[in-house]
Amino acid sequence: MFLNWLLGLRRLGYEPLFLDRVEDHMIGNGSGGPADVGASLAWLHQVLDPHGLGGDVAVLGDGGAVLEGPPRRELLARVAGAVALIDVMGFCDDDEVLAAAPVLVGLDIDPGFGQFWAAAGLADPFAHHDRMLSVGLNLGGPGCTIPDLGRTWVPTPPPVVLEQWPDLGPGPAVVTSVGAWRGPFAPLESDGARLGLRVHAARPLLELPARSGAKYRMAYEIEPADQADRDALVAHGWSLVDPELVASDPADYQRFVGGSGVELCIAKEIYSVTRSGWLSDRSAVYLASGRPVVASDTGLDDRLTGDGLLTFSDLDGANGAVRRVLEDLPVHAKAARAFAEEHLDSDLVLGNALVAVGLT
Image 1 (cartoon, rainbow, N blue to C red):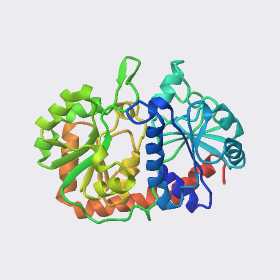
Image 2: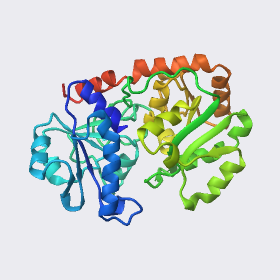
Image 3: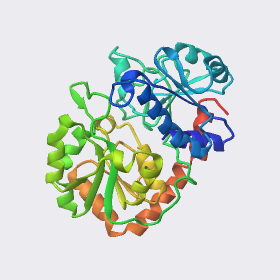
């Protein structure tokens, strides 16, 4: 996802700097220490260097220490001289860096979580941002129950640099996806309704492999505490692979997507219940690769759904959509790429988003 933003901004003539922070408890297995930091930075350069971005990175550690990149004074000068700082999910918490930014744009990639936290008085990750972008395409609109907090949220689908994700034509009759079974956030509740995670949305779909007769190969990150879910998936015909083995870097991830015929995108329950209009950045690269997507219905506009992108709201709907795609993969593969070219091309998506938040 970050590569699509960085490379997409560069295509528009910008010189992006990737700024991240790493704390001891975030590194490796949680033990922290220089060896883990070194391995993390080596991996980062393995990803960025082939794209000529290795010199455009800064990583901050505990206390704001610069672990990688220019000295802090130069870093602050570069932030101050930028068009804007795009802060993903309010993750940047360095007050000096935030204050240096001429314009602070919040990028919401998990619609619902930050807004409900703020509404409940727990935390507001976008409290100090000047302008807001969200992949929740319905946020602030009719039918979406996510609180807008009195702010204007500019909808933006996930961008894809299409030259980096070429059309591969129809793939094999295999259904795949990549994702976390739970993820880093806890489920929420609003007006007595559960706003759950992927685990909660996936459990009602256990019988899908038996229903559709298709092969399902899912790269889900499932924690040991959810062993019962893992056992249930396997017992119902789901083939599970370790995402660290098949999608540990962009090249592996792209090969995994290419080895698919269709993606089954099971959205976090919160995205569907709130009618957020969420569209996955994973689905975006599947679509660009000519891999049709069968996705949870999050309230996407009917103009966005069709042969390349089909939605479902229950087991029968998912089964019918998967069967429909597999019965004519060439048609749906062609439609998937056409969808990406029309709606996800980074030149279009990022150009529109920057203009919409007042940047050119």
